[in-house]
Image (cartoon, rainbow, N blue to C red; front, side):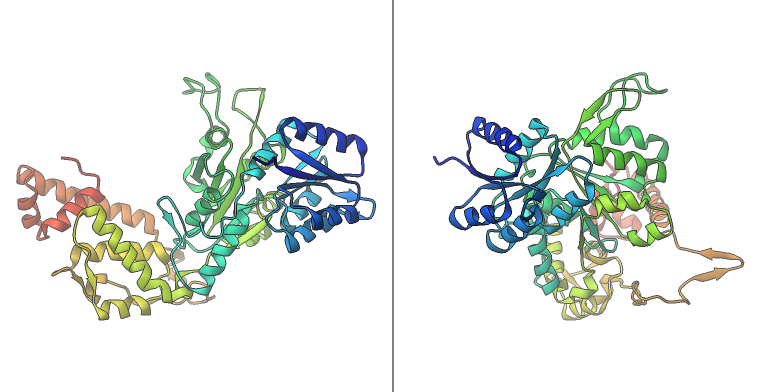
Length: 457
């Protein structure tokens, strides 16, 4: 079995020697160059499994090497060696296509971890459409482009900011970036930043030690430790309060955390992916999001297209969603009538793929004869494009702007539905068929609602 070959580019003999010895002990073959021109000559003559380059070189910069590799030998991962604290150059390297970076003075443990991750890389172009239960379906040009970008970003350790509207599939994209990269065998930890109470946020992210506060009855690992070696996905990152943004920035910069109630730092090796449906740059302008944190997490921005911009995929997505529901409920997959297909294709889906899935789930329970008709979809009157600035979109009531709180309304209606079903079940001594008749719904609808509302026997 041939050994991995690594190209080392640095004009300092001591650094080259340190890297050569370290990689040799890891069982690798090394070549060395002390400038850009010598490095490019070697790259033309020999395939390398990894390239390590200093930023400042006598006849140019490490960025020149990165650009050459991106154009001529893309499958070779390249890592940048930067002066400690030179964040701007490190980020420039990541944006140019570097796999990762390591600071001087070189931490050998961190270097070994970087090398191990880089050597796990494979050509992931054909894998990004699916990973386990996660799939990115669609044939629209925007989705094909998104797959290509995911493939490229999976080969990097750069922080990625995934932008897109609610329900468009940002977490699916994050999971595919993780699964198709060298961290794929390690944990993927998603966290909704808007769902954690502010007083518990530091403990949730960093963990705490026993007795650090009232209720801290034992030591607890935080989300960063849970994601060790893998990926931490910060969903709705714009909802983080400003004090927590400061602590998160420090953790990312230092690659270390300090648990609540502890004076000791814990080293972390975590890739950060983040997302929000808000305009994060606008949040920075309004001083609701720190510019320095934005700079660190938004090294590369990846935009997920809304469903209305890829309408040609609606039928494919609908068919897949119905197949999944039929499999889950152990029922025959229903058909979509031509009128239902037309109604779906004409609807703008402000809630994107998530709204499409919820619409079909509801229609599945309502349809008769195993065919979904247009009326079963219960699509509302199309609203103006949410990306369009409409000055008349705010409804005034007295002196208050009324914004419909969909989450609260859904919960309220869900509770009413649950109470009605439980009452019917009690009256029929938990005979589900009889309870369904009492409520005026089919047994299939009853079974769906029992599962949806987590009503146990």
